[in-house]
Structure formats: structure tokens, C-alpha cells
Length: 444
Ligand code: ARG
Image (cartoon, rainbow, N blue to C red):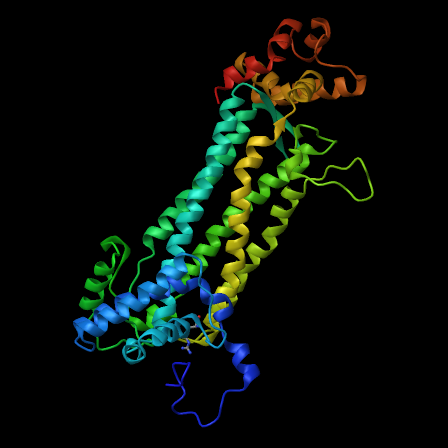
């Protein structure tokens, strides 16, 4: 082994300085320090069980690793410049404390095994943390829906006004989307099991039984671990990362669609929603502007999140089994996405709480736009025995007539209505032109 690296014996020349910088990953994989320390803590137990190290040596190594773990958890951890990756970094640090014992720490172990363990453990925690944040977003929608139980809103199809709904129904649609995301994250992390001992991909002579016992000793629950069935598979597999980025892409898509809705609804043309000033910025030129920057940036972030899913698929596309250095780059794909998602989710509950429904404006639209009642009018005829296709046509003709005459449906005398169908009367229409009545009947 070289002085600061895990390899070097068979090399006669020093590594090219610029190439060393090009290939090292410590600048970003230091985020995995905690998980790599756990790998080492388990490995120390295994080496002790296999009598490769003595109990006193194990104690020293454990002591050194726990000291570094404290630094990492206290956020006082700064990687050394010369380490090529986090695995080397931790080894070098142990070495500084107990040089002789450190020489034995990497016995019968490969970084190919370490990295896949580190990533899985990291993702289990990340998925749990994101799941918790999505729950907060979901509950924010629920709280808002409770406050707006009977407020009216308008549903759209093809971005054209469709029917009258409760605003709470609109909000609770997002509640459903985010609870689906939450469930997916939950299932994902529970299925992602940890294992050790794949070596470089061909397995090692240490017993799987000892890995399982050691994992439990270090504190991993039986549900979170599994035996390695095929080490070649274990070190080659990054499907779990693809799956995770897919779930995050779905989540981001939901966030983006919500943002798009609110950008549209808050525009002067719609004017249904008032955005909280705390989440908007102004224009440097036009004094009147209040722009929906928060929503636009979330929508814009979708480009990078979706790209990550594509990037990871392409990264894996032609990789021969088993480990290839290309895999190091999966972290460059993953980490920026996590930073984005966390920031968005941290802001969202407060945004959801603060945006306002413009009730007066909605009620004005409901008074003026009789087309929102067209479906109910057709239903009235259907309930009186008219076939649906006939009812559909009759109401369509009535709407066309009103549009051409520039009239509102309210107040059209029965004599005129009867020309369209004898079952129509001013009285019946008046009943229909009542949002509360319609929604009570619809029962959603
Ligand atoms: N840093 C690598 C990665 O992130 C793991 C180290 C494996 N390196 C190696 N030369 N086998 O995938």
C-alpha cells in the first residue's frame, strides 16, 4: 500500500498530479463519512470473530472510528486534501491515531463493497428524512382544506373552466399525490437491505454468518440487513439508486404541477389565488410586478431532477459486470438532486399555509359564468327521463343561444327555456344555479 492510499505496491511511477485530482472523489463523497465509519465498525467485529485481529486491536480501532464518528456527527469533520476518497480518508485518520492497528483494518475488504453499503445506508436515511418532509407538506394541504371546507372553486379540463368544486377538493387532490409519494419512499427504504462482505465482487473468505452477527452487534436491526447471495450482483447493482431517483422525479413532478397551477391561478387573467409576498420578488424595471419566483424555481428545478434519472440510467447502460469506476459518478448525479428536494420541501408547508383563495372573485365568476352549470342542467334533464345524448345537445344549444345573445342563464323566462325542452323552466334553472345545492348533490 502507498502512504496515503490503498494501493501503490505494483507502481514504479508517481501518479500524475492532475490525474490524481481528476479521479479523486473526496470533494463530494465525504458526505458518506458516517456510513463508511459504520462499515468499518462492522468490519472490525468480523475481523475479530475471524481472529484476524486481536480483541485489543479491535478495541483500538473501534475507539478511533468512534472518535471520527463523533466529529462527523458534530459536523466538525473536514476531509484531508490528499485522500482520494472517503474510504481512504477514514483509513488515514485511523492511521494517525493507531498506525499499527490501522494497517490491519482493510484486511480482506474492498472499496467496491464499502461504497455500495455506504450508499444504501445513506439512502435509507435520506428516504426517511424526505418521507418526513413530504408528510409535512401533505399535512399542510390537509390543514388548509379544513379551513376551506365549504369554499367554492372551479375545476378545469384542457385549462378551460369545467365545473364547480369545493376548494378543499382541489387541495386534497395534492394531499393524495403527496401521500402516494410518502408511501413509495416508505416501501423503498424498507426494501433496501444492508449487507457486507462482497469483496471486490468475487466474495471473500470471511463468513457471512459473522457479517450478520456483527451488523446486529453494531446496532442494525434484523429487518434492515440481509445476507449476500451473489457478490458479483451486489457490487454491480445500482438499481436501488435508479428507483430512488424515479421516486424523487415523481415527487418533483407533483411539486412542479402544483406550482404551475398556482402560477396560472395567480395571474391577473385568472386572479383566483393571491400569492404570499414572502415568496415573491419584484421587477427591477416594472414597479408593479409581483412575480411568482418560488413557484417558477421549483418548476425549473424539475429539469435537473429529471435529468438525474436519465443520467443514472445512461451511466449504467453499458457497464459490464462487476464494479467499474464509472460508478463513482453516481454521487455527482444524486447529491445535487437531494439538495434541491430538501430545500423545496423545507419551504413548501409555509407557502401552502400562506397563499390565499380569492373568494370574492371566485363567487363573482360563479355568478357570471352559467356554463359552469351546463353539466348539471343536462343531468336535470336526464333525471327526468331524457336520454343523455339528447340532453347534452339541448344544453349545448341553449349555451350557444345565450352566448350569441350575450345573456346570462339566470332570468331567462320559462317561455324561452321551454323552446329548448318542455322540462326546462325558470324555477328549475334557479335551483341549478346554486353551487351549494350542486355540490351537496354531488356528494364529493
Ligand atoms: N469511490 C468509488 C465509488 O464511489 C469507490 C472506490 C472503488 N474504487 C476502486 N478503485 N475500486 O464508486
